[in-house]
Image 1 (cartoon, rainbow, N blue to C red):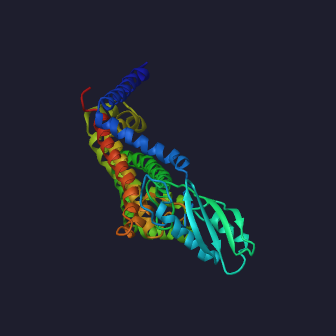
Image 2: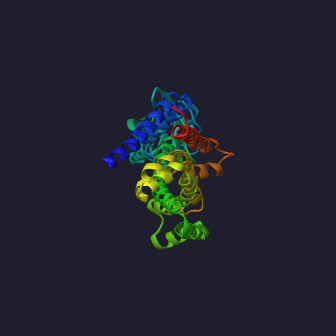
Image 3: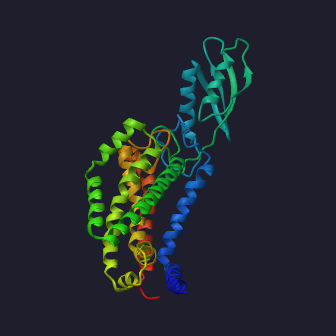
Length: 375
């Protein structure tokens, strides 16, 4: 009877806290806007690459460094130069060129008979499709052909290698968001448990546990990652392990500091006097009162992990081609800022929007989950 009477108020308080938090978030326009932005970014990263019409690793050799545009490519003024380049490779001359609709007609002329097999150069191009022979001179030196135009659209432009930047940004978002969420989950799981236990137990146990944290802090992070790369090679799983093994240290310190303050409060001392175990005190009193700062810090940790991953990728220790992330794209865009600014603006816009949404939503979650706030 006493156990059920003791557990009922705790369960009611927890349910009341969550219900109160839902009401606050539902009535906050900023929180709803941030949640909508995060939902849109996540949905775009998951489904967007399937509807852009471009494989993320496809290289369009005829469109390197193409600026963003709503118009279809190729542009009319780019057809003739492209034909001249093809004619040079085929060792012929392009004559009588005319563009009608979505097709181009021309005559291939040479000083000796034209081999029809050279028409395969059209299908290999990113601008033209498979060419068809319309006519041939008696001596074989003139060949009338027609080739369709490949209509492509690059809403966010292409990178220096001719890959569609929008598709690569959306695919990169999958990896960046997944890495940020997984590393944050590991930091929460380890850091909250470790910090709450150290702050609640106190004394020598607390001192010993925090000295271990100090020792881990003293290890150079980059050296730690280099050692992992030497022994296990570069991979996404390695980045996850390296980031998760470091980020929980900050969480443990924050939680330990908050838990020490909670431990001195009257309701915790009353719970100890009633004979509740340390596990029960952590579950019913310490952890629920830590939700506010923990959620706020977790929301800020996701962009922090993304930026940390970009730093590793910049050093050549992170994500490697053909895989990509926002950090890799931003690093590439920074090197091409003067010639192709969209290569930096597009991935940076996704990263900044995600970072701001997570930051503002984290602040609202912290306030909504604060048990000291009124209903």
